[in-house]
Structures are given as structure tokens and as C-alpha cells.
Image (tube, rainbow, N blue to C red):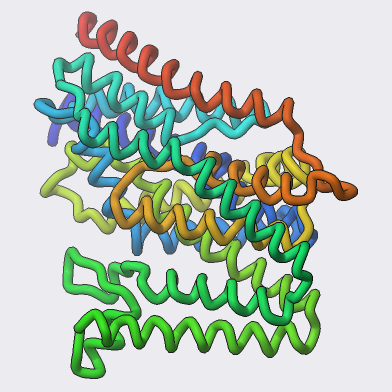
Length: 393
């Protein structure tokens, strides 16, 4: 890599860092702890600091699947060139940054996907229809599954009013998911493994029954710990659970969102730079974005969409965590703004008739329009920009 090729690669890397900063400031940096901030369980500045650290960890430990999908599975027949990668990343980053400063959360997955597809098609590549169907299915399901689950959970917590039983049970459900998350450091080089698999393997069996037993034991332990916490002080127990959920969502955000920033770089550095270093660089960009730009978006999500108490915040974060981990596992780019906003709206509607529980319909309308526009605009602009730059070069 010398001369013009190296210079172009440097520009692409800078565009990737800018994209990582924009995501950290807007999506991965603002959404995980927004419900906790709305419930007054943590301050805005402290939330931005913690989410940056956890997002960096998630990027390094879980970022490979989505990064590889964004880098090589969105267009068939071509490999992104340095100019194409720079065009896609710059277009997406500018659109996301505009959303950050305007106070409206642009869906990063929509924007990056549109930009990568636009430049890939401009290069002469073909549409990856099977991957698009997979992505579109998740994007369409997110509001219904996430919002519906959050609504049902919030209604259950409100109507049954049995925190000493329901909150520990919900914690057990979260424990089931955590026990089966794939962590890079638990598996062989280049592969991941779950806590359930690793513990079962250490016990002498990797059969599904053994992994299920480990999963249930871990879930029971988590539920028991929270049961004791809630029994001693219900409000304190809810707050602790809410903060733990925010941390898990922040970790998941790093694992998913870093791929949107560094994915287009992977074809350019294949064989030259180890993947873990690329993920680390993207994770640092997320961290800086969380520390410098996230507070504005945290405030927008925590206050403008719905006024959430601890119960509705818990209801919003549980499906958000589950959906995020599903996307990471299958390598599907997904927007955390879509996940969290849908869950916040769902939990907010569960209390629509109570004081302070309303949802801003006007804000939601503008947000959905911004999501749709970001996909179309990113695709069209990146296509046009690449054609123009390619003609000049």
C-alpha cells in the first residue's frame, strides 16, 4: 500500500472514525441508558461515560459478525474500493451527524446500508436480494416485536404490581440470554462461544441438555440475587436492574454498531490488519462519540418521546437487549435508534392514560420519516457521488 492507494486508505479510515464518532454520539451512545436517565436512575453525563466504556468492550468482543456482513454481503459481484468505501462512510456519517445536531435520531443501519448499497451498485455490483430480505424482515419486525413486548411487560408490571415476583422473573429471562451470548474470548481463535457452552464443556459435556442445565442454573442465580435485592428495597432493586440492563444494551450496541463504521473498511485491509485491531479502532471512535456527543441525544430520547418510570424503562430495555443480541448473532445491521425508540413508545403506551405516561406522536412521526428518508437519501447520494468522483478520477 503506497502512494495514492495508501492516501485513499487513510481517507477511508478517517471517514470510518468519523462514522464511529457519529454513531457513538447518536445511536450506540445515546440509546442504551436513555430509559434509565428518563427514570432518574443515572445522570446524563454519567450515562454517556459508562456507555462509552461498555460500547468499546462490545465492539471488540462481538463486532465481527455485523462488520463482515456490512463489508461483503450487501452487494454481490464487486468488492468495495477505497474510493467507494470513503464515499459510503462519508455520506452516512454526514447524515447521522446532521441528525445528532438536529436532535432527531437517524437510523444508522438504514443510513449505512443505503450508502454501501448505493456505492456498490454504482461500481457495477448486483443486488444481494436474499440478504436484503433478511435485513428488511428484521427492520419491519423490530417495532412490532420490540414495542409489543415492551407494552405487554409494562402493562404486567403496572397491573399486577408484584415487583417482588415479576422483576426477578424478568431478570431470570435476561440471565437466559446472557448465558447464551457468543463471546470472542471464550471460543477458539476466530470463533465465539457462550458461557453455557464453556461451562458445560468444562464439566465434561457440550450436549444441548448440559448447556440448557447451565443456562437454567445461571438464570436462577440471577433471579435469586435480584429477588433478595427487591425484597430488601423495591425501588433500589428496580434501579439496580435497570442499570444492569442499560449496561447490557450498551455492550450489545457496541457489538452491533461498530460494524456499521468499520465494515466497509474490511475489504481494504483484508490480510494486512487483524480484524481485532479494526474493531478496536472503531470501538475507540464509538467511545469518543459517546463521551463528546451523546448527552444531547440521551436527553431527546429520555424526555421527548415518553416520560418513563423505572418499570416502563425496564420493560423497554429487555426486548431491546434481546433484539440486539439476535442481530449480532445473525450478522444483521440494525439501528439501535429503531430498537430503543420502538420499545420506549411501546412501554409509554402502556401508561398512556396515566399522568406523565404519554407518547409524543408528532416526534414519532418525524422520526419515522427520518428513518425512511435516511435510507433512500443515503442510497441516492452515495450512488451519485461515487459516479461523479469515478468520472473525474
